[in-house]
Image 1 (cartoon, rainbow, N blue to C red):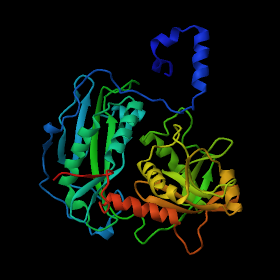
Image 2 (tube, rainbow, N blue to C red; image 1 turned 30 degrees about the vertical axis):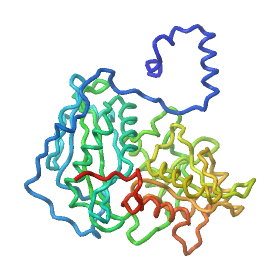
Image 3 (cartoon, helix red, strand yellow; image 1 turned 90 degrees about the vertical axis):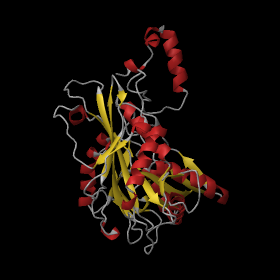
Image 4 (cartoon, rainbow, N blue to C red; image 1 turned 180 degrees about the horizontal axis):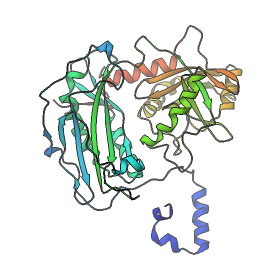
Length: 414
């Protein structure tokens, strides 16, 4: 498989040239992920938003009271869908009433996990306008995910156009209250009817939407983590940096095991060094005082191919460089270990820790169970969130809801 991804000419290089090439490559920082091209090099028809057809439901749903919304349980009236075939490309997009899918039992998605997805939100600002938050990031990541599993890619701007029209059509489902939004779930699946293993000859890209409330409706609740080394979320050369459904199901059992022992989530460790990677399905951040200089440092794992390229992760890093760096903070993307965190906690240098993701924005961490001990993450008993987590949530929400006009906030045309 890896051999097929190399240029044909490289297969016939002289040994000396191969050794020289390998030496040069080893001098660069290694990325543990294949950077895939599109599923097909054939210039097929791309997405054309001008061909969108809309069929509205004749039985609109009643709106639930905002305080009764449960994440991912309530869905809007409609769905956006686009079919793709290898011979034609993308067929005209459709918005139709929300409905079941009809798929052949031999569809390749069921047998070989040809599936990827995105998680993004639409917000309503104080003027009643619908806004998307950094949708170009979501579309770029979805294209990377789909290409990695031989599914088709698409024009990002065209897809944002369609998602915007879909979100505007469903705007009545977005509560006006702060903290509420419309969760959007773009999903792509391989639909070819075959038990043969190969690139799908057909696919379906669809978007459904679910109105959601605040992740912490009564305010922050800091979580306790179990450092997990007996199960691995992602590994070098794998697909941990892609948003594939196949990455999520294997993580449920370790989460249930952690819950039996009284912990909310897993802190995924990797390797004999016990590198800290992610927390649950979120990117992990820690604020520490540097051991040598005493300078405050906001730290997260680098994008080495095992870490998901979180949109919230990127937002936290950008805001930290914009707002915390002038206050003297060091903003660092580097590998760090659980022993390093434990040492910082014992020396009083671990200031706070939090996860970052679309659902919660930030999720503060109170402690981490590791090797039979609880590593304290800096919160006082009466605190549920640290200073940096609170500020990040405030800064990000200001841009999501349009309180601060910024290029990250995309205003949906009416």
